[in-house]
Structures are given as structure tokens and as C-alpha cells.
Image (cartoon, rainbow, N blue to C red):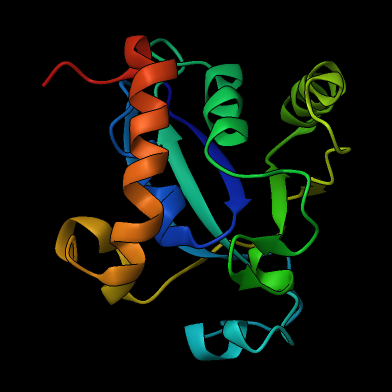
Length: 177
């Protein structure tokens, strides 16, 4: 089995992480930072919006169980790709919609996917496509945040609706366990 990696920014990484964890073939989802200029940024630094980094998730997956296109389908379902530098009440460049591609093949698939999907949205998709330069793993307390903090007000308001949408539209992609 050859594991592949996808890196997506779709707003708060707590929310994005929770959406990808239940998918079959997904082996690991790590929150982190990408797309900026400051080396080894901290959460506090990224939150200022001055590092250029976005909150992202790095998804390690088995392409024999789930395709990159399936991951893109989920990605575009669980966030709003038409709002620039914003997801809900989270505002700033760190919450932008972005796909950080690992290679030319991922870039081409993502570009074609966006072109095909664009007519389905009332507003134009503004998702940034950029090569992945460096992925910085977020601080440990961000990992499995929703699982560890299910009662958090923010989590309760934002994550369960995303998971319900995921279960409704992509039940076939979910793990059976």
C-alpha cells in the first residue's frame, strides 16, 4: 500500500480535521499550517494573520480505498469555497480556502475539479491552488480537538452540521467501524 498525502485549508482546522477523520482509507489527519513565509509558526502567530499561513489539515490516505477526487468532493462539501479569507465567523487569511498540491498530478486534478464544480455555486469559487512548500504540524492540543472537546461551544455550533452533511451525502465513503 502506497500512502498519499493531501493538504487542504477550509477554515478552522478543528472542523476540517473532524470531517476527514471518519473517511475510509484515511489513515491520519494532522492539523497544521502551510502557505506562509514565517518558519515554524505558532498558533498564536498564525491567528494574527501576519504569517501568511493558513490553518490546514494534512491527510494521509490509501488511494486504493479513497481517491483524491473523493477527498476533494468532501472538502468542497464541508466548507464554503466562495468566501475569500473567511469561513463563517472565522475571518482572516489564515481561514482561506486553499488546496496545497503535492505534485503536478494533484494540481491538474484539483484545477479540473474546480472548473467542473464552479457552475454549481452561486458565487465563484475562490479556493487558492498552490504548491505545498512546507507543512508545519500544529501544537499537540489541536490534534483530535473535536474528539477531546465535544462540548466546546464553538465545536458544537460548527462541527455537527458538517458531519451530518457528510453522513448524508457521502455515507459510502465512511468507515464501517
